[in-house]
Image (cartoon, rainbow, N blue to C red; front, side):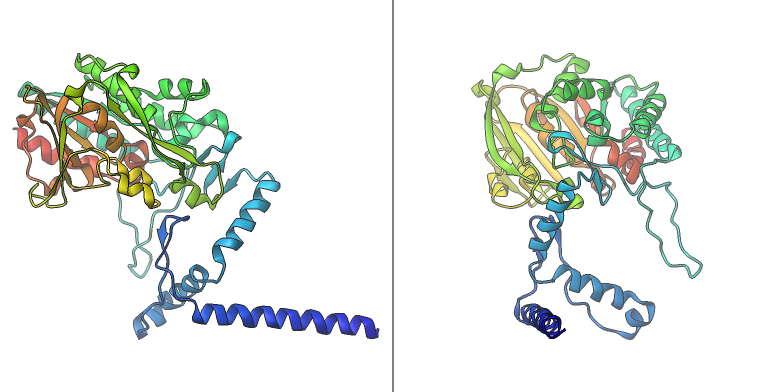
Length: 412
């Protein structure tokens, strides 16, 4: 009895010391603004007011603050991840954990295009789901068709590429049925019928992935540079332009320790890392490029760069941002070799960033962020052709393609 009592006292004392030390560490450790491993901003101490307190918002924010600023938080997350691997867990936080370190987001905030609210009129976020809303997909494909029709009347060709999500490509890596991915791809194909130049690469990417090709990152939601090259080759084929062969490029490794957004979302902080490459054409006439980037909606007041690749991003967590210096409202890429080059407009999300390095081998490019399209004054008739590159995740979670109806009116 006495020995058991001593053990209880020692255990209680050690626990009290542990809690006391953690409390002191919490008080005296400066708050962190962001987590590089989780690739997100951390909750700061919330401002108190009666409105946020009575609504419960303050309580929610303070709980999130304690969770985000907890001492040794990332260490505990690493321990949690290690145990999950030992237990052969196949999913965490809506992220599938597959073979050879392959990760893929399964749950998305798919939108039906409606604004939802509770009984008190408060906005309700879309729930995370592995489903999609067919009406939303259809309306956005219809907007693309409107733009294509307007451009066709002016003799301008439109080429459309909607890259698949990782979960659509790497199906064979997961112990999860592909029915939802198959249904989404089928829906896109059905509603894209009638588009003259819709580039269907879904089967191509799956086959290349199953063949062991590195077409999508393991830890991030983007395609790799190789994956972007295959998209470039298919776009060139559709446009009747000869694509440069893979052997025409020098492959440069920018980083071999890339951990992307998918790993951060799934808490897989020590998953196998990815390699980020950028390819430069060996033919010097295709290397002499100037890039102008701007966040001014007028396309002015920006910076001119001598390269399409901003290697300063490699030192941070957003290594994919090295392509085109991250997300900018307006980007202009021009050849400085004095020769004539056709001019193309690329309407894109972030998948278009790594694609642009290849399209720039054949075109002078204006690159516009689709999310900002309606705020930018453009005339699509100024271009020889227009490319759309927009990932299926954004097709089901946003409605930015509807802005193409505004662009279609500019052509009329």
